[in-house]
Every structure is written in structure tokens, then in C-alpha cells.
Amino acid sequence: MMKLIINSIIILALIINFAGCRKFEEEKVIARAEPFVPTNLYPTERIPTYFNRVAVLPCYHEDPNSELLNYVDDIFHQELVQERIFETIRIHPKEMKVLFGKERFSSSKNLPDNFLRKLEEETRVNGVLFVDLDSYRPYRPMSLGVRAKLVDIKSGDFIWAIDETFDSGHASVIVGAGIFQETSQVRALSAKTSGSVLQSPRIFTKYVASTCYKTLPRR
Image (cartoon, rainbow, N blue to C red; front, side, top):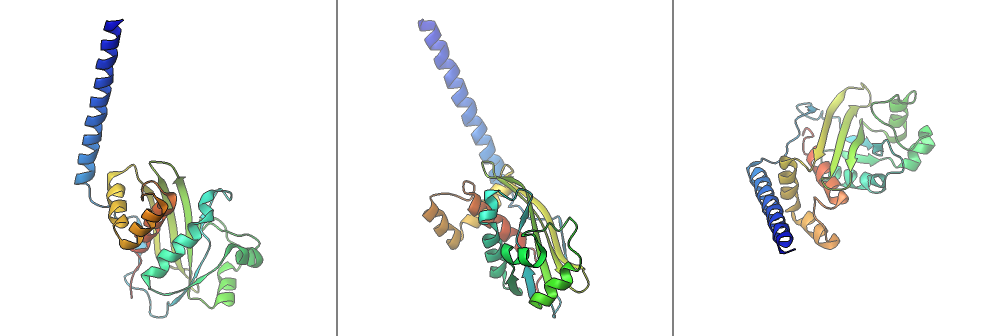
């Protein structure tokens, strides 16, 4: 019996030691990592001078019942407005339903006939912003994929596009998210919600949106 107890203690000590070593190695990897910087993108050198009013469509996610859609439109729009590049005309899901019969559209699927022309007539905008979301994982390690396109509404040409997945299982994303959380706004939000950027899907989404929009071309 005593031998069994001693063996159990030894095994437990080995497990704790292994877990400690593994955590130490992970911390070393994170300490050496650079913050994540999106690279899979298409930016024009400058926003054209006439391009000053953009229709922001509701974000698209393949699961219309996902809890992600309860807050993602607000967050992505807030982070875009903070960049102060152009005026944003937000189109809400109910407005999309009236105009086109559906609340959300993917930029990678067929759009209704005269979609861009009708948006221009209704809003008098120069461009339209599509945001598609995938790879959504709300539990640790959290993940969110973004495929966004900023389109010139008359020509249909891209002004900007990005296709990136933010996976908090990667050291560079952990570092980038940590730096983002140190901003006063996010620090206050984290304190209020008793969470961190790597524990709260909302705050993680805020980091993702902010990081994406930082790559937008300037004037």
C-alpha cells in the first residue's frame, strides 16, 4: 500500500514538473515572438481623393444563429470609425433585408443583380465594405478569420482587401493581443468585464478588427 502511495506521489510530481517545463518553454517562445502583422492583403498606395463615403455592410458568417453576429457588427464598425479615413454609412441587417431580401451577403458568393448600383442610389457612397468571418472558435485558443474587401462602387475595383486568420494558439497573435490590451480603452473594458483579450470573444474580436483596419491605406 505504502509503495503504491509513493509511486502515485512520484507520478504526480513528474506530471507537475512536466507541465511546469512545458509552460516555461511556451513562455520563452512567446517572449521571443513579434506581434502578429497581417501580410495577406491588397492595399492601394493611397485612398483616392474622391473616396470619402463608404457603405459598411453587416458582417457575414455562415451560421446565421451564431452568437458572433450578436456583437460583431458593432465592434467592426467602431474600430473602423476610429481610423478616421472616410465617412462610414452603416447599413443594418434589417435595411439589407428591405433592399435585397437578405440580411447578410458574402463577398465571395453571387450578389443580387445591380447590387452595387442600388447601394449607390440609396446611400450616395463612393465605396462599399464587405467583411466575411470564418474559423470562429469562441473558446481557448480563440480564433477568428477575416476576409474583407473595400470596393470602389463605380468601377468594382478593390481599394483594399485582407484575408487573415487570427489564432490565439500562435505566439505572435498572443503578443499582438497583449499589446492591444494595454491600450487604456481595452484595459478599462477588460476590468469591467473581468476578462482578458484571450478569454473574452468580444475583446478578441475587437483586437482582430483593429488590427485589420490598421492596414487600410491612408490619404
